[in-house]
Structure formats: structure tokens, C-alpha cells
Image 1 (tube, rainbow, N blue to C red):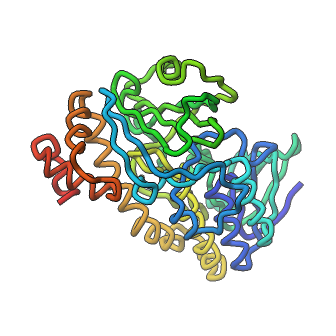
Image 2 (cartoon, rainbow, N blue to C red):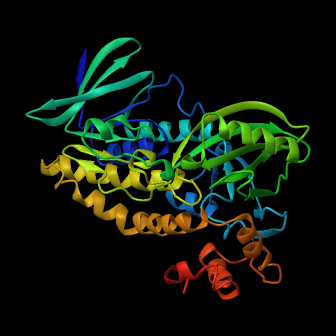
Image 3 (tube, rainbow, N blue to C red):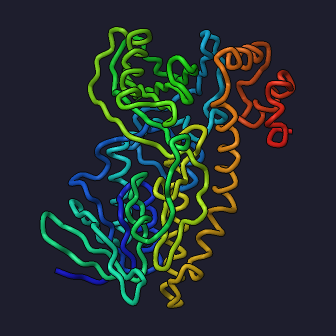
Length: 393
């Protein structure tokens, strides 16, 4: 079986759905592929997003939101904590989503814009003509399918095959991967008002533990550790240890494991006829691991650029340069800064972390954003943070 369209998007996560929606709204014939039979399942993230940032991209539907939080509470290894308000707590704090509903909602918006959505359809390779990509070959419910299209948008996650098939180097070093495990937990000790972050090399080497409330004493409790400090099964083992001390009576309702890129921007996210978005393009915040909003933003850009490229007839790497330029001008600069922060903070000892968070005890940081808080930290701990002076002064 074969079919033709203008753009085929591989992966119906937030980035893929926004790319499909933007391209369809521009008048293109769009096909959106999802390898699983259900969009949004399994959930492989903490599900947190900033309220204002999300609302600038889409109008949130009430059913997408599992909980609203007041802010973020960050714990040092010795238990000392600081609190930041939700509007200053970062791009992952404000709403805790119901990702299964949210992802389906975005895919539905793409469909309403005119995109053809095909679930249980796995891309297995790129079609090529004269050496250049011209669509994808796929398996749909066990039957072979060829989809011809001048542009392929790869939104197929951290394991992205589209990038490799197109010759884009998406290789990640172990130090640029976070190995993650997450439980959906019900426990009376869950704080329904705040997202919580727990730091310490003893509980999460090179990473952190999180608790993102979903209402009525339900929370995503997860852990990410640096790949270079991990071994098979380590993330799950450490998360179970954390549960014993912080949620001893917690009941685990769901469990998921996976990886998160924390590499910062890669050299290229385009090739002839191909663009990558979201985790596939390594557009995830290296410091926090959050990537929902950046995936959505880059997806919109990719869809808009696809429309221009198809209209002009130039789908070469050079013809897709606008995509690289636009996402790097904003998202890319932020990710590059976060990568420098991440590279510094993973070297800190527990004593360093205790000193930094403890030094803020007498400071009013509730309304500060991350950059403002870092300026205060630098003022209070200049020797420890000297390496970051160019980012905070």
C-alpha cells in the first residue's frame, strides 16, 4: 500500500502534533504517525509545565490539567529547603498535566487542522530518490505502507531513528544522558501544593529526585541520574530507596523507565528533506530534563518552515535553514546556558549543595527566577560559583 502527502511527521508527542498542526494550518497535506496504539501512553515524564508558557502556545483545556501548584520546593542533601513561586520556579512548574489526555488533545487539534493521524504505524526507514529522502516506509497494523512526502519531520523521541536514517549525528555521550525511573504514587505524605526537588549525590548522582503532585495525594515520583554514574537497574533501585525514606507507605500504581537527553544543542537538526524536533533534536533542558514546551515550540517552527519549503520547492538542507536559525535564536541559546549550568552542578559535592541552599535561608527568593537566584547565590558564594560568573553577572 502507498500514499502521498506533503509532510509526514513521525511521532505524535507534543512536538510532532504541533508540527503537524502548524503544517496543516498552512494548507499542507500532513500525515502524523504514531507507533503505539494509543497516543500519550506510556507517560515518560514528570508532566510539569509552566502555566504562562503553555498558555502562550495553546489554550489549555481543563481536562489536560491534573493539578495546579503554588511553586517549587528544593531540598538540599541535609534537608534544608527553599521555596520558589510557580511563576518563577521554571518551565516545569505551574501545571502538572495529565499527559495521556494532553497528548491526545494536541493530536486531535492536529487532526482538526486537517492532518491525517495514523496510530499503530511504525516508521521503519526513509524512502529515497536520487539519494535524498522522499518519505517513509512503515508498518501499519502488520501491513507494509509507503508514504511519499518531500519532507519528513522526526519527532520520534530520544531514540530517534529518523535522525540516524537521515545521517544526522544524534549520538549522546553517557555524561549527556539522564537515566530515569518514575512511579505514580499515592501516599498521604504527598504535598499537593508544591513540586518538590531533592538534591544529593547519595540519592541521585548527577541528577535529582522529583515529586510532582497530581491531586488527592497522588504524585509522579521520579529520579534521574547521570548516565556516566549509572549502571543497569540503578535508577529504579535508588528510587525504591528514596521511597522507603520519604513515602514509606506509598502505593505504586504505575512504573516507567527511560532516558532523557541532557546534551545541549547538537550540531545539526536538519538534512535534505528532514527536520528533527523535541527529544529527537536534543531540545531538552540539560539542567532540568524538561522538554514539553521546547518540543511544542520547535514543532510549530518546523511546521511553518515545512510549508515555506514545499511552496518554494526547495526542501534541501539549505532550504530548511530557517528552522535551524529560528529555534537556535531562542530555544538554542537557553539550552546552551542550561548545559553550562548542568556541567557545573554535576561536579558539586553534597557539602557544596548544602552550602549553596543554606546560604539562601535569609534571602527572599520566593519571587526570583532561576537567573535572579543564581545572581544572589554568586554574591553569597563567589568562590564556589566563580566558574559561572559569565552567566550570572
